[in-house]
Length: 268
Image (cartoon, rainbow, N blue to C red; front, side, top):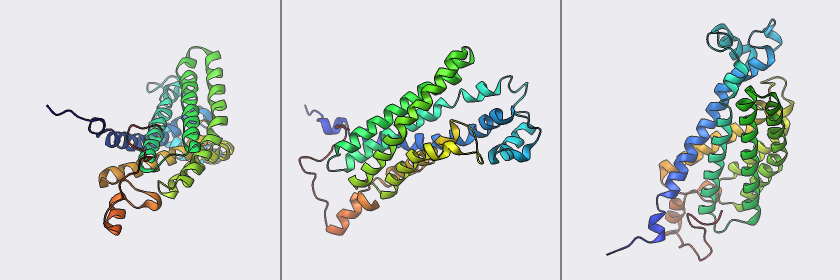
């Protein structure tokens, strides 16, 4: 009776990972876009501003429109800060899933991942996990315990101190690895640097954590779109954005993977 080998058992894993990563990446951007006007408007003017003209762009446009609909007052909500903020930990969860799927895709498509790529990815993932837990503590538990609210925000902010160098380094490692399109590496670099740059945003959103996480939200959406395109095309892009299928057609046949080639389910 024939038995399935390791390769056939894990055959569906890459496709599933790409699909989940694509969905998570797009949803991460959606979560940021939907929640930010509610959260920023609540913080900047308790939902109802005496002077809308002097508020950040998102607040004086979308926030003002939402206020007109009664989104910041009963019966819709009695505490908009926590009622809307409690959903933001979803952003961290979706970002983690996206980054994980992207890294798995990169591991499959590279001949061998360099240690810098592996360790910077792990550091970025750890930072996002800690940041998400801090956000969860602040917006969910902090509603009932003030000390937890303060501690949660502090933990989230401290996690960015690791996320900044980790994302920048991972982006640089992705560029050096040359297994994925170059823009993906630059997007990760921008996501890391953006945590610092957008902390000084006083014009667009002017609210933490949403302002610093804007570049990461955009990066997740872009990476999710890339994974979706790869999934739909059924090909694995190699350095420079070409697919394995395209490389094979140009050279007549794709070269077989060597002994050191990364395989699905390998070490990331």
